[in-house]
Image (spheres, helix red, strand yellow):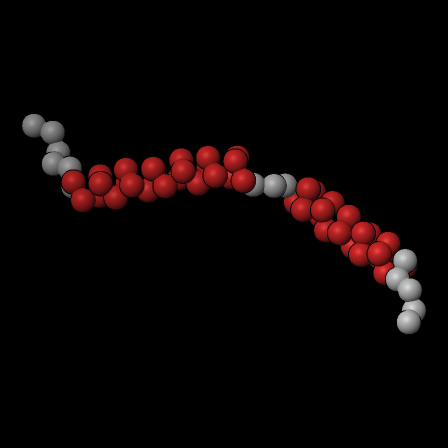
Amino acid sequence: MSAPINLNKHRKARAKAAKKTQADENAVRFGRTKAEKDAEKSQAAKDARHLDGHKRET
């Protein structure tokens, strides 16, 4: 006979694997690299400086 298996551990392992695959799908769909985040942040700062440079004094 084979060794008995713990069904509770099997259920939890299956749920953990499902969450891992969902997390990987979300990372592909919504994730951005650090370089993309830094580029967006620097572009936003550049745009803010550009607008501040064109403000009129009242």
